[in-house]
Image 1 (cartoon, rainbow, N blue to C red):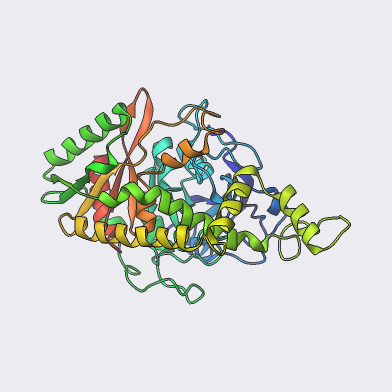
Image 2 (image 1 turned 120 degrees about the vertical axis):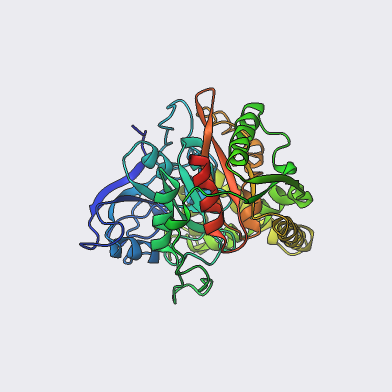
Length: 423
């Protein structure tokens, strides 16, 4: 069983039939659901009930899925452990002394514990793939533009995508088929990949597949993680895949660039939570600025305040060029490196997380160490590429995830390779 996977449990029936009929799906609590509160794991939105469904929720219902609840998450998606939720932490069903990963930890835990057949998460810097790896399930971060973000409460809108989690690659691909495709309410969505039959790609056939391995994403990883990853690669080679090293030198700047861009966008996106537009009104004397400050002081947790303050600083006059502009330069460099690496290989492979699941509370007082744990996942979001985390085995009884990265709208390639890892 999972520990506190859900913030709100409910039962919402979908259409009478469809490709997901008789399937139960949990939804991360930063995705709008009509008539069901959507808290983002924050006191700021503890009583917020959206009047509309996100596009992905509409599509799940239309496909016959039964929604079973809203899952716990790091507040506004800011975290790697699902410990910063205002509603308390979620524990990992594999080992309840450990975290499930974040920020979609509730979604991964619900699937791993069998409390939902599948779940939706959102991935800003690895928030689907990290908990998938820590909980031993499959998680897909789609290409930016494949899945509508309409109804997703924005944290860092140039980076985040909604993605599915499920016990198997084929089941995750089936959910992706349902939620993918253009949406007139989200101008960032594209026609590419809309009609792909993703589940059919999970055929386990990797004969002749070229897999690039960026050495930079292995250096510094836990030895137990590396050993499990290399065993999985050897198994893929035995099935006919070819592996070779590729270079991604720019990834050494990825974590720094990611956090500057993410917190800058967060400082803008979260400005709407002021007690007037969203959030509880403050019963205080004084002017609007004092009321605004009181609402944000009481409504936001420490991690959200830290990122909003740092993001505001990074965007401020005199520092924009020093931090934000340089981060965007690093992002362009990273995209170029990925293009060159993927010109030499069909997919790239790395450990999803360089570490095993943390003990509860292990890193809460060391945010820098927590940020560095995202080193293998944030480059994908900066480059707007698709990636999947698939269970590769266990080390000391704990799950290890293998990450496969593809070219833009190359989801079928990573699904095919991941299904061979399962085999």
